[in-house]
Image (cartoon, rainbow, N blue to C red; front, side):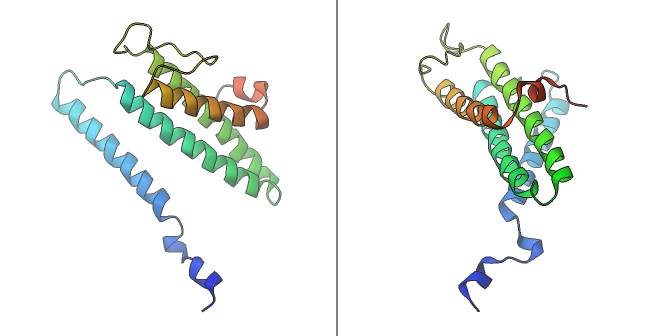
Length: 152
């Protein structure tokens, strides 16, 4: 067996981490659903929760970008659909980032996002840095018209 053969996984084991992430999201959704049905007043999302969700969306955004780049040369039609999904994921990340800043902060004024300076600290620091890095990647590959087009 050559070293290259060891790196090739059977199709059933090709994406174990992606399947695990999906299972984790399903579990989290079920947990939230159970809490909502058990409590009359379910707790709204908090800033750390949205920070974690934003991290997941931006990681998925990067993955979809790489998949679209690899698919586009051989399968242009599929690549266009993946590029559309890439733009929609960015819109989702942007909306989560905006929602994060609308939630109450521990200190007054700490919820403001100032791209011209570093945010005050976690989780504002992490979500804003991540969002800024993702926005630079989006601007290199997506037009403003693509981002302004509503999802159909």
